[in-house]
Length: 87
Image (cartoon, rainbow, N blue to C red):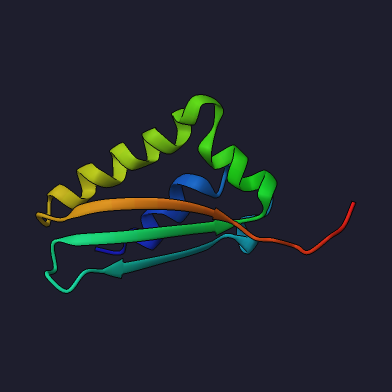
């Protein structure tokens, strides 16, 4: 299953710049665990997490359901790009 494609379909309307979002899926050696890393600009990462983590939890729930069809446990980690700007 293409988890990256599923996540892009879910989050592209949420983030300000969908082209800058980087999604990578890494499958564990045992084949049962998948780590998905979603990296975006700081503002977009905040949007993806949402207040009290509600959007992040919703994304995790949807992807978890998709993973159950393949007997996989999906973990999602959010990261933001450090643009190196000094204020």
